[in-house]
Amino acid sequence: MNSKELATVAAKIRYEALDAITCAGTGHPGGSLSMADIITVLYFEVMNVDPKHPDDPDRDRFVLSKGHACPALYAALAERVFFDKKELKRLRHLDSFLQGHPDMKHTPGVDMSTGSLGQGISAACGIALAARLQKRSYRVYTVLGDGEIDEGQVWEALMFAKHYKLSNLTVILDHNGLQIDGSNDEVMSVANPVDRFESFGFNVIEIDGNDIDSLLASFSLARKCTDKPTLIVANTVKGKGVSFMENRVGWHGKAPSADELAKAKEELGV
Image (cartoon, rainbow, N blue to C red; front, side, top):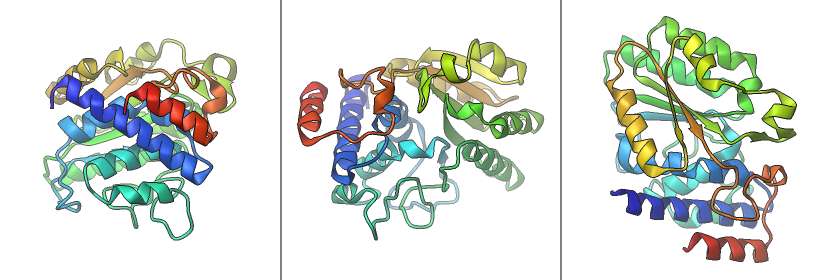
């Protein structure tokens, strides 16, 4: 796909994530929208995945460490036809395989169950090391929230990745500046993220995480780095694409009304 086509898919993913959250009456729209472009570029251009063979041992793996943003992941998986789109409207319903956090045992296309913040990146490190030990060529991608890196376990995982020189691991920080309790600066500052991650021995790339071309270029650079893991600081806008949600901490975990969903659909142009 070209950049324009990928942007169109990202808009669809944003709307479908919001529609699912509205149907559920609960969920996390802000962080789902901020990372929609990241998810789109990964699943529609970068990653080696095949919905017809979801358990292919040589497929690339994706771990959503910020598991609460799964509506965007589910929407991307549905767009790739890992399952029927109609299932999105059953998000968080009883007996649905689309729960409030990713479930690898029941959801087609999900590589790791996540939810407790800080644990996903640890799993991603283990999967990347397993690839090396098994002499497989697949790559591992994981998305962290910037609020999530308040967790000490994240930094232990980063040390692990550097120690084992996991060059097949790409970590993406969804750096939207807000977390559930307020701005990062108020809760736990993430000042100078590039310097911090470089000090942990990572190949660090800083980009506009809502720009398709920048994302494509950064993933290409990550693949070329063969002696250390890569961390992409993706500067994003929480609630991206919907004017009344953008940069509003109140939309971290709040479902839109039907009228708000209709307004969002109009703004997204889908």
